Image 1 (cartoon, rainbow, N blue to C red):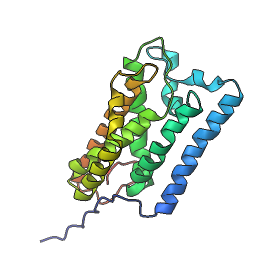
Image 2 (image 1 turned 120 degrees about the vertical axis):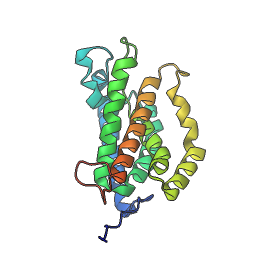
Image 3 (image 1 turned 60 degrees about the vertical axis):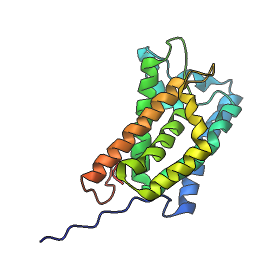
Image 4 (image 1 turned 180 degrees about the vertical axis):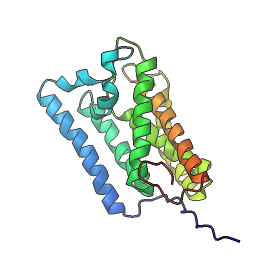
Length: 209
């Protein structure tokens, strides 16, 4: 009989909570610095958002989550980004980056494909929706009771935000929300698949828990 390595148990909170908080604060501070600069310079950056169905609008897939329409728009995203991002750092920076990249690309490309061609889409809410859905479903995929418990708490506290995937409010990119949520679901599936394959811990460039 051979000895099998013990599989790493998925975490629900960052191992170094203060460090994770500093990392998320820095990330959100960058968004605030960009928006303040944009407001002081005539909102020049907003044109670099996602312009659906146009080839030159594909650049916005990279830049849109970094840009916001105004200060209230960024304020509405600040707390969700800080809290959800902090929770997402529980299984390390590598998984955080991999999940965020997955959500970022799926949200951006999906918006480019399904949104109206006469619009420009900006804002980090698609990423926030992806993080939210990832945190809600990851525990069910990897069968982690602790992560499911966190998901229940998140759902009761912020579950109402999921209505944002529906076209209920004008001037709100429900397409970005919907595609971001699908990106979070896809990322959770990738994490579960990697975990089932027996990955002990996230290697560089992987999603495993």
